[in-house]
Image (cartoon, rainbow, N blue to C red; front, side, top):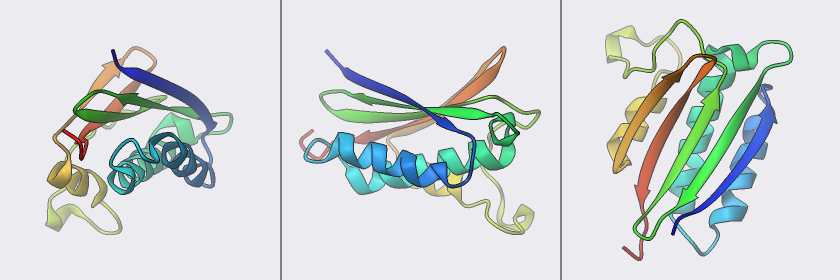
Length: 129
């Protein structure tokens, strides 16, 4: 049976560091900590920069689900008109590397659109798998 944790963070740029610490504390000796921290950092940063989560009073959720063979990191934001997608090199000015980086080393990733937001997730293989 999977083990799942969830925490809400204010939609402020400095809260991305708190999300990284949350994941680090949960996965110490349990999973791919460095990769999971990178994933949550990219997804939380995107939530704060590109969605309503970064607006006044906004928030985002971090969900960590530990399975036998993988860990799933999910960030739930308050949505925007943009749909998460991989940027092409020519389309990037500053940034734009997050989802491309995530897609390169995640077992799987994707997103779900909800009526009042969306979730973006990545699954990482556990070393013991």
